[in-house]
Image 1: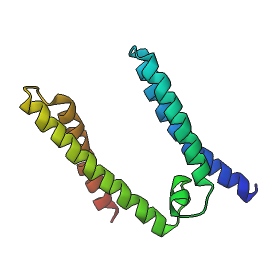
Image 2: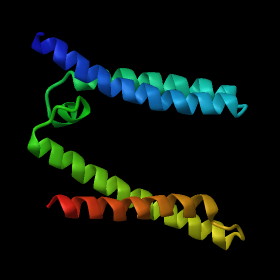
Image 3: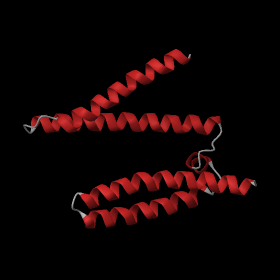
Image 4: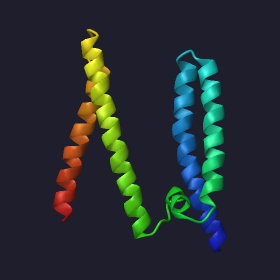
Length: 132
């Protein structure tokens, strides 16, 4: 097996995960009665997949992270980016819950997401604590 084959496989693996998750979104929009939205999402996701595949073939930190072959420094950078993203998403979810409650709603969709995030965080801490 040659190195270009491995690199191409890694590049395709990232694109495949985007295609599977994006395909689920497109299918949900279609089944939910929004074929126009589904078509628009399919186009955007296809363009994102092509962009990810092309970018992952380049040299550099982001390309290595996209193709899941980064060194320790790049993996640490990826972990920090994921952590920042998680914080922003948690704050956005809490803000959505506050706004929904202020409008007279029950805050439920947001509360559910916050609960999943909180439980996941506690389980992750417990697992990581046991490993160290």
